[in-house]
Length: 279
Image (cartoon, rainbow, N blue to C red; front, side, top):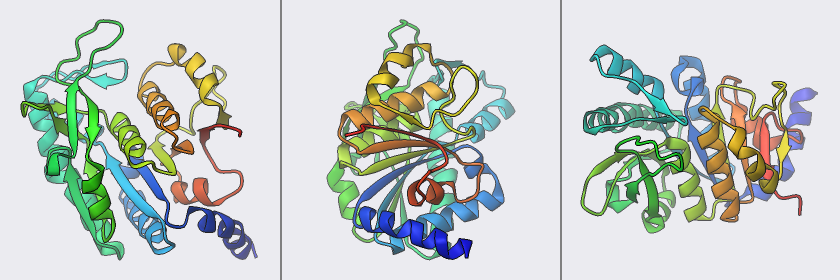
């Protein structure tokens, strides 16, 4: 009976999200665990079959770090962002575009829906500029997305599931590493997505006691952001950017849990943190 109840619980959400765009930032354990990788691909295909328009934006931080360490390159983060020189950006492009992106595309294809892999360079999808931190710290060739060519994505999404690697270039053709959370937020904002979901390796946004914050208003998040550090900060910044751009809600969920995207979208309680307005 629980299976039937779950399906009935999902029905109003499936109806609500029909023909809506949902941006999903894919990363963490969900990208690294072989079982979770296959389940994620099937879940994305299910979203497409029930009438939603999923758009995947992915990073590949652990894989980049692994290759950097094997090559003896320094790995350094500032405010949750990877410090990137020209060699780091070159390696990131090889890992993200040449390997991780195509692996995701192949899994979605195999699960039953055609997917197309992209990066910020394809069709001038992203126009990027150097990111400047308020602290004044120099993080090198890390980019902020100034513009997203939505016509490219809309054209592809008519028939395929777009899978986007988070790298891009500026107007002069200089390549930048782009934080995948920030890229997902920019894509969701530009597309006017209905929702954006971030997969991570914790339950969601946690308070000072380590307890899950199940819901947050954007204004509350804005006030709390200065006290957030590490990898959660770029996710929350991207959530805020998306919701400020009229994305209905942003969600941070634990990608280590099987079918976390479906549980967050299609059940009454959800499983992670939801950021949105109450009215």
